[in-house]
Image (tube, rainbow, N blue to C red; front, side, top):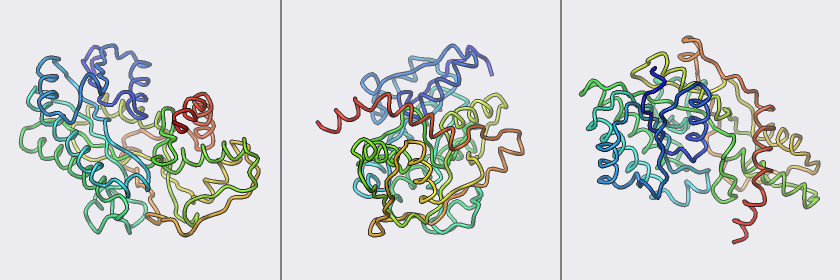
Length: 317
């Protein structure tokens, strides 16, 4: 791919978008286009159309989205489905109108059925009911990848959809009310260590199994597909192995240095029993994740501690 191509990274301040920027800049891509929310509201169709009309974009990386953990999804399903549908339809259609041939859409492993054969293959999509706690977000993401497929079939575009497993890494969301399980555990363990708390409470039974991918590996997979000129299809992106939430909590506590007890609150939802992606499509093409979980959590904890005072002040109002 041309290192001077005008690549629009939508959502460049988020965890995925910022990782894409780091990856592309490290490999010499020098013409990245980025806009803050104040500069461009992606839920505003007219604003998005004007942006694409004016900027001559050649490649779109659609990482902008409203995201959150179980609590956020369960409490604000209307916000999750509306904002994600609006962003996807506006950007994908505006890209087509502006004759942008290449686009990467970022979905989520939550698009797959709740009780899915493991590991989860791409063709299992829509084969059974979704997990109810985040079905609004999942439906929005399914609509986005189906939109990419439809535009490829009708207009001959080259729009690809990547379905990453549970992501973590720099610029993650550590808000106790809206974060995913790994960043939530990092913050809980850190604050429990500072308070010398005898116990730390973890949501759920601890038995569900999850797979975790460092966001820098997702960025590397994205660059790999762009440079291989892959122009259609759905690709799972993960590490190919999982662990229980109990094992994850033990790992986080060890890395953070928290030595108290872990207490599991079975009154809180567990979500899907297991989510392990089949990543054979990418593996057969020659790409695999390189950042191990312990190394990745240690890196992420460093990011968290560097930002903790700011995060604490925000939480305290």
